[in-house]
Image (cartoon, rainbow, N blue to C red; front, side, top):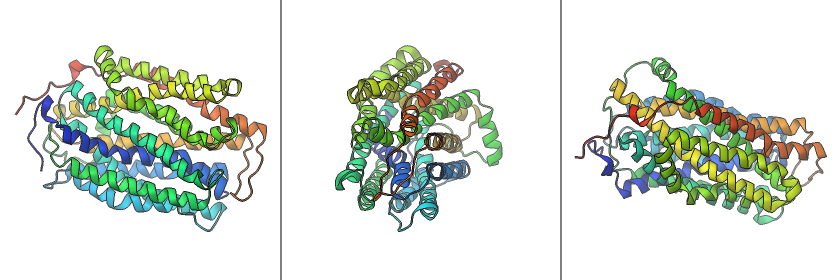
Length: 453
């Protein structure tokens, strides 16, 4: 049941934890396919690199249609559970099954395998939207305080960090548990374990947010979806925040897709995927309070610029890995992780501010439309990271293979892997830093917190 609007202290510890645990789904579904799916198709199902990139990107194009619709549906949902929570439950009942099928290991290779994986990944993306879009809309409705949103969302980011470490280490470890770079059976086992993690986290968030407060506009926007999207597009703060977030996520997705190749062909150790991943996401577990303080000290825009510069510097620095070796690569990716932690926290806190300002200005509840549009465009654009990396591999002459017949890659392909992990995403993330300068929403623009009940 939705409770009345309450003040800064109204979001209880239990609700924070209940909301945060849902981020295990967010982090896991982004991390595991982003880390393993391209490699799984090119090295186990003999799918050409360019086609594997298309398979990873195609469901994200579908997100452009389904995510705004799910957001609108959740805005208009009337239920004793609230407008968002029934959708959390719907996602929990469908995503784990679809995710398992993606890595189930069909007895086909090449184009038929690409079609199978693509269909299953499309279904998984749809199920994920049912959960993720309403889930992202909730923080803007839990509190009306500018800085409290950052504090609330640090809990979400701590869970994202923990989930990303667990999934980023656990999933590759399970895959590699049967030797070398894994087998179809080890991928299948990994999929079953991760599906169970998804199910538990989504149910945990559904039950954990039962007492979540509801602030802001009580009535859904009854206008047409096209008009609502047009209104969002004319919001300058939203547009620039979305643009810089898309650039950030494109860089992240490119690095995720490149990580197994970087470990295998640059470091010469496929098992290093887990430690590289831990180096990136580990700082998220340690630095959230620091980024909250920096956001208060320099405002959210200033802290975002600092985070982006750290992210870009670490990524570009990793270009020297062939000279300095594996320890240096891990150090540079730890610097990336410091920036990544700030970027993740601040972009969602800033989105909640944009939604809150819109609710006050219009008197209507359309957080779902904003988050649906955000998630759809961000997801679609970020998926091009894997597509770009797949194209870069093809240009470098990367040779696809089956698990039973590994091949020796040409030097040009190894160079393409290095560039795809370092220089290319670094340029993208530095572009996002320039975009951050166009973001203008400040504490003075955000409505003050509601009075305590």
